[in-house]
Length: 130
Image (cartoon, rainbow, N blue to C red; front, side, top):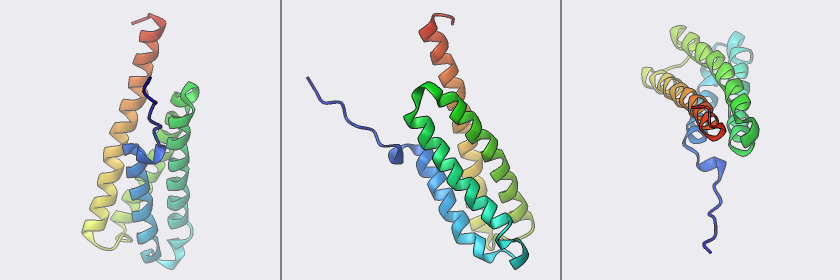
């Protein structure tokens, strides 16, 4: 009998992208104006860490995966709004950095939506509802 290979949450594509986004936010937050560096920048960092926790929880807690992913989606919408505001206010210095951060948020939103919908479809199939 072949051993089942252990999957690590840190290897999941969604987790990797959220971690990269956290790195971008940590890198850009010091460039914010002092008035917003610790409020908006700090909130963006907290939300990013919370997203990492939510993705890990969804990955490891299969019975409650949908609840975790729903929470991730809510927090992600807030983070996307803050990233866009920071980009509009030119707090994120450099067009490339702003574009990379925005691209990360847009792409992961689609993956999170897909995961929640896929999970609901799978549950229906298992329950025989289809």
